[in-house]
Length: 283
Image 1 (cartoon, helix red, strand yellow):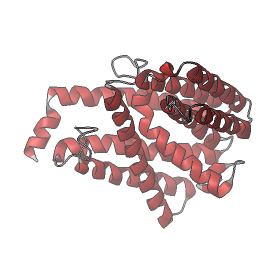
Image 2 (image 1 turned 180 degrees about the vertical axis):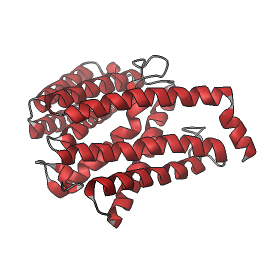
Image 3 (image 1 turned 90 degrees about the horizontal axis):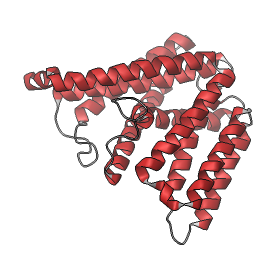
Image 4 (image 1 turned 90 degrees about the vertical axis):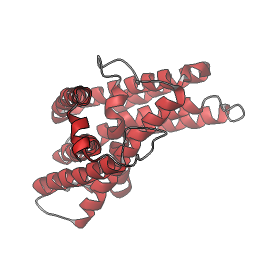
């Protein structure tokens, strides 16, 4: 324990933690401010996020080598995001799905565009999931707050717990610094913070929210590991340079993308396209 605290207090550890906290705080304030505003402004923000994520994905995976297929996928994403910006949610999903099937069919023999397909899906989810969850009412804003209150405490407490306790690594070949103790510490923090927000907003407690917040925390950590795997696969340190000194946008929201996608898919399955947030918050 003492050695863990000493490591955490070292200059390098503090510098790393401070940079993570500052970038997360700035990004968090921006996201929350735009989410509160909602409407076309938030949708435009989501579209910009999708475009940046797609470009960072393409840079990391060298997807541009697919040539015309890559250009087709990028244009399809732009058309889908434009439809989404106009409020045509089903059309936006349809464009992405049709483009994905077309690329898969064209590339079925050579399989040169697998990473293009992955980038199209990942960027579309990064934009469409939070935008469709937000909607225009209080339930959408509450759901976004819930996901954030699970993912960010998970990330912060996983860092603290892992640095303090140490122990076996969760996936050393993918992310050498992440420990099982850190993952569990983050999980507990995510469940606690997410459940506390739910009880405060909904005014009641349900056992299912414990399971739901646990799932979001676990999937968020999986999203973080997924991006780490991609970066190791292609020998890339950061997804981009949009945040000076701290890497790309994907480096900051990888966990959020996956957790938000899970909440969105849950809402679609239970409530449908009209207002998926009502599946979680009936307010």
